[in-house]
Image 1 (cartoon, one colour):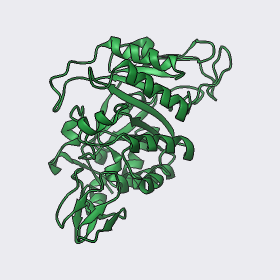
Image 2 (cartoon, one colour):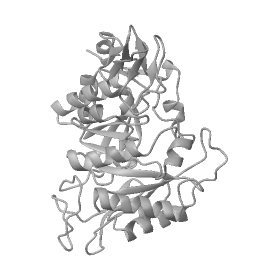
Image 3 (cartoon, helix red, strand yellow):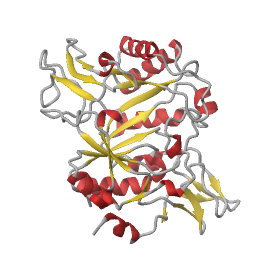
Length: 368
């Protein structure tokens, strides 16, 4: 049975449980801190959760903007099964409104035609297995808004020994957060800045819920997670903000959570800002290391030093990276430095994968 046939057995519109009826007759969606309050027929800001028949439904269950095999380092995750391929997909919509969105064609899509591919959770898990992918990533847009579909996919993957990865802004309420991360193995959380001004004015959100998600992941789960911050010239790249952010990470999450500082390019509604110079990323990495972050990386630029992993104890290179290609490996199977024996935190195996930098689009019905 192919994935298209399986998908046609159920509707892409499914009921959800994180909502409540308000006294004024509106229905409030409780998945994310936006708490969208909807009249009949209205959609939330994310566009994919809507009020139908006096309840909140997800309108994109089983639908995707496409599937692609990526290197796990592209998520980016540098300490989770390095070198292995990950089957990646997203849907449409987003629960933030970042003016600088680098995936706006997907996250801001209002066209259901964008969702050209379809697959059931079990079909995705089988495809990942047949394609020799070690994990499946919910990416391109935020899995928070297709929570029910993501959880079902994660459960199907777990039954087949496939791990799941959430690439997310961490903008989610407490109860759905607890359920979602019960099934997730790794996450990259996009910490977009470290001021309420940045989140409110540029992302139409708030900072504290994201910090709450990071603290929850550290204190209440076994999820391996890393943090990414896209540095935008003049907006979130000042020394003072980077100092405060990296100090907060070490004090609240510990020194072993990897941080990725990545380069912005003008896009969506922020075309007036220049691209991030590589020197800004290097400066951010240096500030992070100075403040105790053991694993700090640069991204979206060619920087072999900034992309490689070094032992926090002896300084030797543990994992060499040239873009997404691994060219050096000095870790034992349990993540110890081969030179001094210090432990490098992460999810490692005796040998890394060899997927390299390939990006391979796939149609699931060809592999189901």
